Length: 385
Image (cartoon, rainbow, N blue to C red):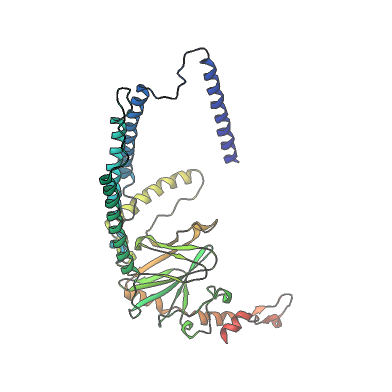
């Protein structure tokens, strides 16, 4: 309702301004007015100075933005390849800002210096081969260098030796949550198909596949520091994107296919929390949350909980109305703590069998005889053969 009222008010305001313009035009009837479309020297001078004004606005706003929001971008990367990604990004930014500074200053300066004047005549020439070569070759060489460096970085990041000791984890995306499936001791994920989804088997794992015997599900991701992690990604419904910003990792999750991304974490969650910049950032966030809590409590609301940093897995595609809910906690453990975390995990096959052995009440029946085992779905029977 509020949005509708705002739209109505803006519409009425536009109509009022239009009417005021018509009234102003009527007041000018009978007065001498230059209706020609040819710019005068005064018009050209005004436009020339406006060019300088716009140039000043660009750089003043840029400097202000860097000073005000310069601390918001991601800081120290938490993966081995993160430094390479940051270097590539920083080189790109430096080149962009350098080219932008040169071209924009020259553009606005020449617009002022060579503004129209009745005493001057524009010089026209059809072409200049030297200029054409300069502004064609230089960008081509720079872009070629960026592309080659990017391909080199991408190849190093994406190449994973099949014989390398890795932790294999499947990220299963669906509207609007993530499910993590670990490959178990054999580090080989069992086959899966969306048609096999049944009860606790929420990722559609083929329970008859021998490689699936030790696979298990987790509600949060735990990974060991210093070991290669290979993420296999699937989507149940629409296009999602697995995004772990602090690890400089992102890969689309495409329905009907498996994508992958691998990295080696370099900081445990505890170590990253203790970095000076993160301590300062968390302190600032909690200061803001404390002020907000005072306002909420004054209005009868509940105070906000203190913020604690955690790595997160996010969805970087707008996948639906509850897209913002798609996040999962990522915990980087020491190798010892990771082994402890693994020690009590139960394979999905065992969980599935246990869920089928649990008696359930038959609808409409009473007494102890009403307990029976649910019939096994056809898809599960196929999988178990």
